Image (cartoon, rainbow, N blue to C red; front, side, top):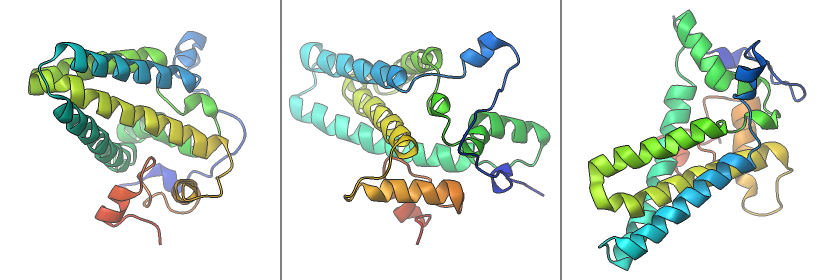
Length: 207
């Protein structure tokens, strides 16, 4: 029978989890949110400047590809959160992987140091995405990937904000409410962080 440890985890709004006894390894699991956001924003800007300056892509197509990248990232965000971070943990290994990847965040949702991947992982991810996308879609990468990466930077910002600050008194409040429901009431709802779009489409939007 599958089991999902998040259902048994009681969120703690203070403290933090030590994953590695080795202090060097432990430090690599933590980061200030501004570091990865800065990495991805600068990476996105660099790519989009390259697209306008050196590629043969027309301006209108660069805009379309950029917006497409934003949209596709939001779908990837939803899928990864729902099916990877909340995978069925039917083995001890899966349970350990799930906890270290995401369960620890559900147990300590206010731990600001673990709201994003560490810088070294962010750099490796950015370079890997550039290589893979260029291999698949060639020159279109320089317009599509900036949108995709900016989508990720936006996700990081929203995710940090909903955990670190009180909700605003405007329509953005829905992001705080949905993520609060996901953490404190029903972890099988509200998988979208930066947008509720895919929760609405796939029927996981909280009532």
